[in-house]
Length: 181
Image (cartoon, helix red, strand yellow):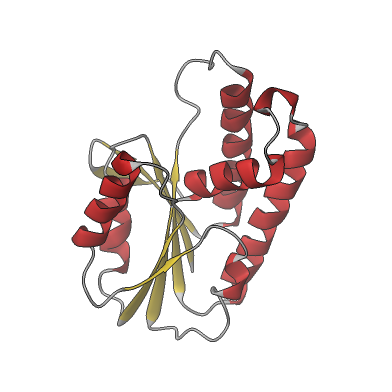
């Protein structure tokens, strides 16, 4: 079963997603963040400290079909946090060292969407419950710079594709999860 949990920043989506997998015999937590500075290191440590000790953690944001496989047990759960960070990492990996103002965003989106399709296919083959966490990025104002506008658009389309593929979708607002699919 594929479940998507979405919501704004600090909406409680992580806690909600963790509650969805809390009864599983085993949990694989896939963390997509990378440490670039002390603040991010502290955020990641805070998340690590909040997870149960028996959960396995894999820090990865690409080629997820290598770890979301048919070899998992139906009694297991996989929690991936978070799609939005994964999309950010993919954009910068595919964009390379060039200036984001010079990026071909249409071509980058094709690569990101291919990674998302591989993720969806892996989730479909996996007998474990898979919960994906993502940020709802489309409820604010139009960003002022090109990179942020394209990121919002690409992340929004990724979220739409994942919601379409998911068996269940939760929107979390102010710590309250509302099942919308």
